[in-house]
Length: 500
Image (cartoon, rainbow, N blue to C red; front, top):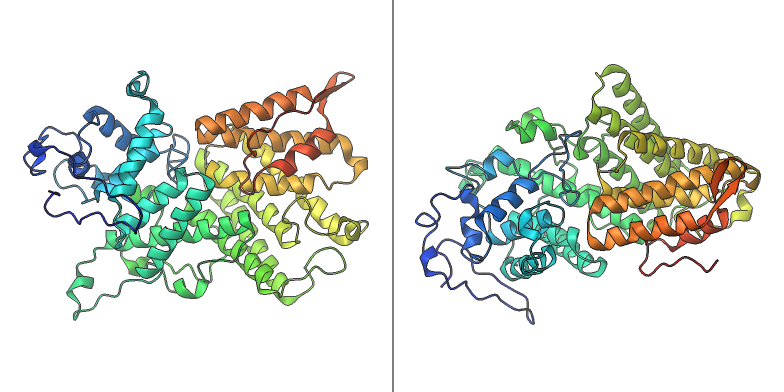
């Protein structure tokens, strides 16, 4: 019934199992669709022969398409990292063997933003296609656990709703820990299974683990929860290689890579070289917050104890490495944009270290006239200026919109706390924050996010005040809209402008 060589889909009790597709002409992958552009799709077509071949190939192409201005990043905002080498998956003769569920989840990801004529017809809408592929993915995913299954869970989490997404992130994290992806595979002459692991497979394991590690820290901030992954369980895991080199087909032996443990600097422009280290530092702050050892000192911030001083030193070291790279490297579109993002995120994490995590966190009166407020104000202004630079360089905030929205939100909380005598700059900084939030939402490209962006702009324009020849945004509206953003930095549903 099921294709020879592929494991049976396994589901937990109460969940459905998709029946095999009734397509006897697909009896063996070698015999059917010999002219298929990407043979890697054969296993998926055994279950979904209704997909137009041209669309399936276009979706796979879109999944692996790099950003035109930042080759280390995907054009699709839902591909958080290139885990697999494009050349291996799309090879015309001997492609990487991929589980059907993984291929189906790639279709789900790519369908979110691809511009394809197949989706213009009434009978074959983007939404219908996505729902069918999501159902197929959930039915095929193998709960017994492989690396492909972990990536499939990541894909489902990325495009899922908040509740569904959290479920899939949990599945992905648990399976990654069961598979011990946080450990390097040793090369042992007594274990033939380990000898069979190629350097490419080892690199895939590293990339999956570190992507989950990044997301774990990010979601811990979003939902103010403890960490799932500890630094101890991956202290010897090597840092992934440069993303552009990896996608160009290069691969490095383990001896030529560095361990991530102990690194507090920006080593490159990809997500594993610049963002991973920041998330490691963020994880240190999250750990202190939930371990009960973090406290706010009398000046309004927790900069008085050894732990927070050490974290601040890590941030300063990272910031210095950013400046050194900017001064010593030849400027490219990618390096310039990544540096701007890095400078903004450094300021936001400094502010998180000060203890302000949401719009009502902490006693504002304790900050008045304090050294902590002065330092936080300086960081807030620096962050807002960096955000303005990012908008100039990457107007659509296309580099990493899935992650970036929540950091715009955190910076906005501090903008609201600027002293009232600074009202004109405060209004300007708030406008930058809302413009950035709107761009981040639009970059995600879904129907819901497009509606959110329209709601933001509509209410934003309604509340504008004209003073002389300049136009400002009402501070009252800013104070209302920002606290009503969701923990991950997206606008809560059904937000409507207040009656005029």
